[in-house]
Structure formats: structure tokens, C-alpha cells
Image 1: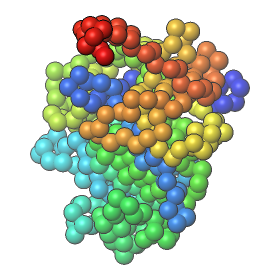
Image 2: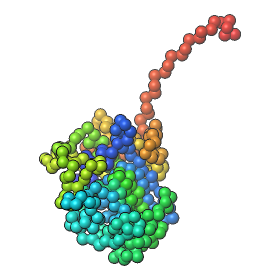
Image 3: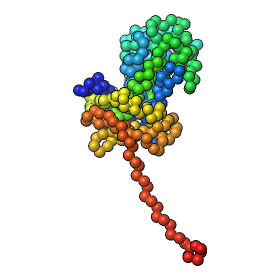
Length: 341
């Protein structure tokens, strides 16, 4: 989608990863975190917080005609025998034509092969807690499926799946529908994802304090004909009702120039999701530093990304200085003149 000026926009839902995930006992909203990297011709980005459904249009734009899905962890169960649905069964329920390969030797029951254009439909309402997507230029043989499963299953923290798969151009890995790691042979992909992450953070800030107009369901077995989100799922289980403007907000995405300006200063950025300003704008204070779950956010801000919802414009600014604590009074001397000498 685009606004009246032709700038790309994205609809940020109340249930975005920034809103539904929290850290600490106080339930603090999940922070912005991104790390951009380049390793021997592979360009990537990792971070939080984004659901795969909020990135699927970007993945489809950069993927080859065929995509594979493996390592799929989900909460969809067959209603009759209460077993976990296979990826192939989920594809049939979603109305997606797909081919399956048995990769049980790799610890997963099936590797799914589908058209790139069907990825979004397959993922609709699925909210996987684990997923790996690897693209391919054409049909995937059983041997190629095994090679993909091996590359994904043996990837280390400092290695790239694409190094072991010369025909692949895209790899996406998601965990808890919040953390992500993406590799591409196109240097434009990390910039697009970083822009989307800023968009999601701004939208989550605009939606802060609002509640979706849905009624919590008392039945834990709600969902599609064969798929249900049950007990351990962290997503809200709701019954349909009339939507309101507070369920989602449309945000204009920052352009590539703004993202490049940020990345020219550092490849690592983190910070709280955002602060609404009195004039209605959103301020995202970011520190040029990494963040991992269990760590405190950096206490400083190195720049601010500002978003004006009324004008649909982004700009960068220097962070506002934090107020200094009141100076403590100088303690009075308890010694007399002679003692001081």
C-alpha cells in the first residue's frame, strides 16, 4: 500500500510482536533490536520484535519463485484425535498447493515446498514459534530437500545457511514469532527489514494503551477446522467482533536513505519501542549497541528517529539530553579552622 504521496505504508496490528511480547516481571514492552551484517557476499539482519506475518511481504519480494518451509513449530491440532497437524495438513487447510519431503532424520517430520506467492496464505493465523524458510529457483528434489535440512540444522551462530546452499538466495529463521534472522544475497533486504522494524515500533507506540475490540474466548479450542491455538500459545484467543480504529494503525515506512543514514553510524541498534510526544509525533530513541534477552537496554540514546503520523514523514534528530539529577548540597565541614590546618 502507499499513501497519497506514493510512499509505502504498512498496517501495524495491535497484536504485533512489540505489543504481545514483554520482558521482565513488570511486563515492559519488547524493545527494538537489530543487527545488520555482511559475511562473504551474504547480507543479513537479525533482531526483534517482528512476527513472520509482518515480514512475509518482504520475504516474497526477495525470494525466488519457490520457497521451502521446515523446522515448523506451531499450535495447530487436529480436532478429532488432538494430534499436532503436519505442515502438509496445514497447507491443505489453508488452501495452499504444496509438496512434502520426509526429513524426519533431521528431527522434523516434513519439509514443505510451495510457491513464493502462497507463503503469506500458508502463514495466515499460524503464528509459528519456530520456522525456517529457504527459497529455490525451481522444483526441489528429495536430495535438495535433505541438503536444505542439513544446512539449517547445523547452522552455527556465526555461519550462514546460504554459504552451504549455492542455489538459495534467501533464508529466514524465526523463533517465538518475535526473534528473526534473515540472510539474502541482495544488500537491499536488510535495509527493507530495518525500515519495517522501525515501522512496527512506531505503530506499536501509537497503539499503546488501546485494546482490540474483541472478546476473550473461554474455549481454548478455537481456530480453523483442523488447527487450533491452545493452552501454551501466548497469542490472545478471541471471538470475532466489530473492529475499531484501535485494532490497527497504518504507518508510512521510512525510506532507504533514512535507514542508510542510521546504518552508516552503526550496524547495531537497540532501544525502547517509542515515546509519544505532546505534538503527536513519535520518538524512537536508539543506542548504537546490541541487545539480548536478559540484558538491560543501554542507558543512553545515540540518535532519535522521529515519525509524524499527521504528515507521514520520518526524520532523524539528535537525542534529547536526559535531565540531570538535582545536585546534592555540599556537606558542611565538621572541622574547625585549627583542625583543618
